[in-house]
Image (cartoon, rainbow, N blue to C red):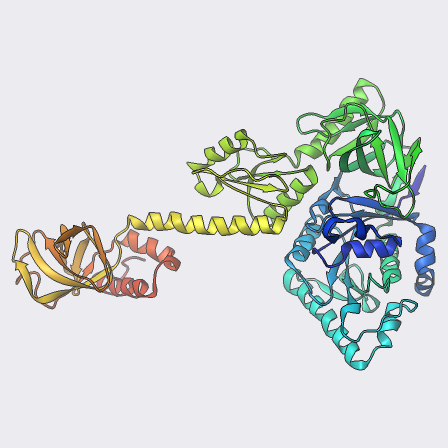
Length: 589
């Protein structure tokens, strides 16, 4: 039998911008008070039934002429780093629609941008909830009024501040993503504009509008995606795996399609192979409760129908990890084989291992791994291998094998996993925030790139300009020994020389500084130089200006990496090029 399931809604945003408070306001619960540091530590899900939606936003829906036909909303509560917004189902993102919570007083933060990047990569529609409107000095909250009515009752100055802050968010959406957006009541086309809803989660003002927009959008634009055959096999994604007293290892899962029964055969995705087991028991949370809350009421059930969140107890589940797909099937070998292929195709799409050049990434679970992979791909960073779990000796060995071919790929990025030591040839960076991880990687890569280029430039003939000092011809020839001052650049032994008129001289055989032999010397120093095959008074004279003879390939290499040169070095190279081009107009081009 075909019916419309509840839309799945992910809620995400920057730490401290009020994501959990928004969910609390929707549920009329206080999960926030149980969280360490008031930050969500694990993901969960909450069911908001249709009758609650009707109670909270019925009058608003009536004004729009919308009659709810969806059975409710299923909220996935994700960590602030947004990793689990990438939880997948076959052919798309698990979430049908998303809520991005932004502190209206602070605007976009790096995690806000990260979250929207993941949503856009997954093509998940979203709305912006501009929270903490009550923190605007002078704002008087009236939770009995619709949020627009409450705003209209503020002083003109406060209304202007709100408008300004709203349009700062509009500007940030356009600046970072090229998206057009508007306050929800001014949106003319929800398919091309992002709706922004000002709220106070703490005072429960604007929550009805959030539910109204989510319900109306899902029903109007996503209805085809919400159709399912409840008689078909169950398909789902594991949110969290944990050990509970009396139950052992359990899985909090989202079932997004079909029906699941106790004793059904289920196939979970695994790191190496599919895991085949059966449903021993199922527990369903009470409406408006939170699956993570240990005090939530759970009821044993024999059957669940999508879309819903449910706790599963299965034998032989030791190797099951969060983020993995699952599907139920008949007990026949053929059906189990087909289901195993189905889930492993989804896993293999994330657990990348190719011969392509690239870095190695690890994460604590498959959802986190995919989020990291998505953002790296968006930045054009290639991944050679991606895996779940701590960094192993094998990972280090594989990263070392990258070093000879490309040292910039001899690195392992670890998300939400323990730090492992770096080695001489392998850099290891770990973090529990994706954008920190990527920022640190890009900083390391830029630094290493500069070091590698500097090493490469080290072997080139550097630009140098010297003047032969008066009364400092110490030996006329075999070799000629002169006293010189370095006017610009760096003088080195072995360096070929030319005069200001372009005539070639010989090379620097030796350099003495304070009667000590040195290999190179910089600007401002006065040294004695030995130049073979040159006679003072013929090829060189007191007061002559002499330059290093830079070859065309060396000149082009310097020009390509001009950012590593000082302003004086750039000007000196220009002087040398002008001298050389008097004889050859195309020199160095």
